[in-house]
Length: 512
Image (tube, rainbow, N blue to C red; front, side, top):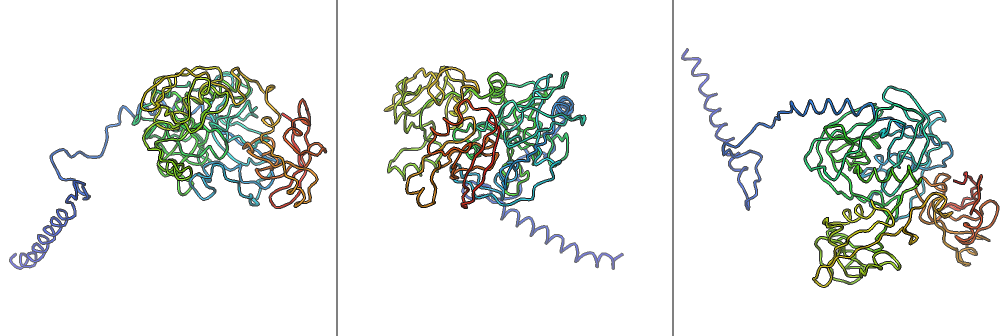
């Protein structure tokens, strides 16, 4: 026994020394510097708690919400058979904050697409999700899920398959509306997304990575997020995303974000990721904005968008503010609100007396802290709607009643029949100088600008800075020429164009 104790004594001494060393290290590394805790260990004040959480009630809510939601979420298969060498039909997840593109390149020219191996004709080009929102077959999804499709197939959770009709889509919000010929379908109700609170439980339901009817849980991490994503596909994007940490992956696009009652509070659209896969940050279009868009698409076939008519500077965006001050040699101070850097002629803002230098602080008495607040407050309204706009001028606060107008200055609803030719085919056109025509040996041509993602010209591969030489065999030299040839025209359209490498193509589409 004595021999055993002698053998154990050195080990005991080593143990005491080790414990003392560890305790000293904890005290040394766990100290605070400038009142900031730099240690990994919690200094006990008898307030420590285990990190587990009693989720018995939440679990029941998750089960019920999942049972309600899963049958109403569908798979959407996008088939594209008439698209040249292009990568723009990839799901946004493939490049948003990943290796496939630049999410902050809003107005930049798109790079020449690389050759990709196209899937067989009987295989979809891309997969996404959608949500049934009425028993008679209306389905909401993302614009980028359906863009460029020649055929859209919808597969229900019970594996029934349908060919869908695209009712309309809106690149400004990344929302699209589809319809299948069926009745008595399970569907989700829209919730009031203005009532969503940061920290509340949510479920994300969709078909990520080919795994149908997948449910993930998380919380609302933030509201009113602007991530500068939709500007790549729209000149007037509306970004006021709900941010969630519920796991979202490629294929979730267009799926449902629901509360624990199973009500639809958002449409999952994007993630922030360095890998292209979930890293903790997902974004959904809020239900109130999505509902307004689908109501317009259902009734008019296009979105009724009201505009305030101001060029703005977000005072909360330090980078944007610094760039503006540097470029314009100004010294505008940061803060909250929207600084008016210009007012458009004959706009609602001009009519109401708003001027350059005013700072917009409220819309209908709701605070405007950043551009996302302004864009959703105005962009979710229709032409003819009236807003109370509160602004500061020379330190004093004023409120003006503004009547919103559309981009053409109108205050009434428009249908597809009211669209101009360039709106129908999805691009604008700039005249070429005689020097450019001479340098490139062209007898005619217009420069293509502001191509709409998924528009008719985009579908056949026409991109910004390409040159269209002829339409229906007739030379074009101005936007007026394009409008004249295609106005009231119905049928197949032939387009002869030159790409960025000087290659000449002739492709066609059916006039919408």
